[in-house]
Image (tube, rainbow, N blue to C red; front, side):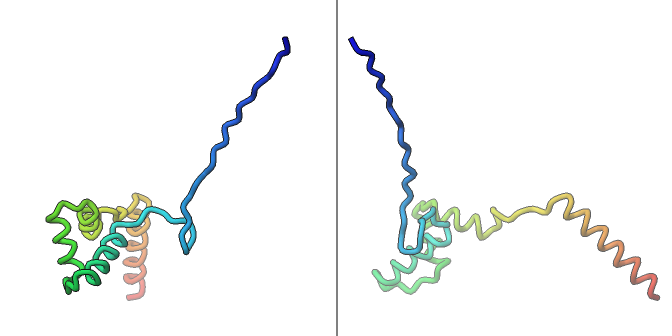
Length: 103
């Protein structure tokens, strides 16, 4: 009997879809809404504003429209850090002292 060693290699292939402009990622809510809006403008000949179109999608329960409105309301806006707040206070105080010193 011969001792045979079997080796199995696992090859992981990173498959990414490539479009005309490179690697394609996840579309933002804004981009998706605008693409849907343009498609409806061409197909149905509707002349709705983008906001009215998004409101119609929201009534139909579209999650992308809901995310779009949340983003427009500032859901992804970053808050000011403590360091930034402290820096702005010291700059304001220095500016105030500088104005008083000139008078």
